[in-house]
Image (cartoon, rainbow, N blue to C red; front, side):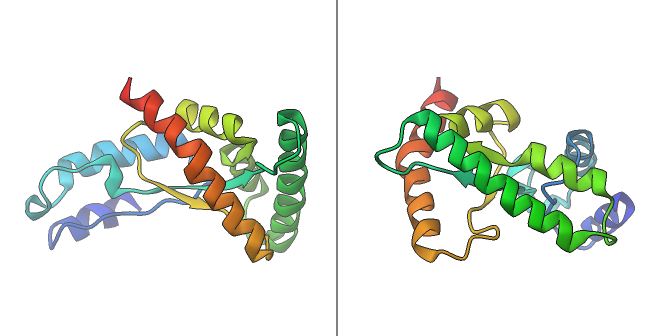
Amino acid sequence: DGPTQEKVQSFAPCHVFNLSITRPEVIESTHQRLAAAYHPDGGTWERRNMPRTTFVFLNAEPGLTPEQQRERAHEEAREALAAYWTALEGTLDPSKVERATNNALIGNSEDIAQQMLERFHPDDRLMLWFDFFNHDNRRVIANMEAFMREVAPRVAQAVAQ
């Protein structure tokens, strides 16, 4: 809520949070509004003050081709997001949930890196959800490790250029 975000800035610097279903134009208008309203004790408003959330369906399983990894990642995403939609039925506008699918990062390591570079501003802080409907702790940890080993360096190198 824009007026509330501005009101709290009159008391102290306050960062904000968004959901993965937040439309890009709302995110950009929030950055513009808070650049003007941010409490001076916080310095200058930065994009990192509003983390961007996104689901990550990464498949970097060894022994699979990049195409097989991509296919498996998309399968996992479809299953998880279908369960999410079912759980939210009647509680949230379905079109908002559909947009969450478009915001998810899905695929092999190269796919995920490319999607990040296309969808997010280089100064955005990302909050990545690897465990979304995945209760296999070893797999979640393996996905996070693969992200840091294979995705993060690609993104960092591309942003530095």
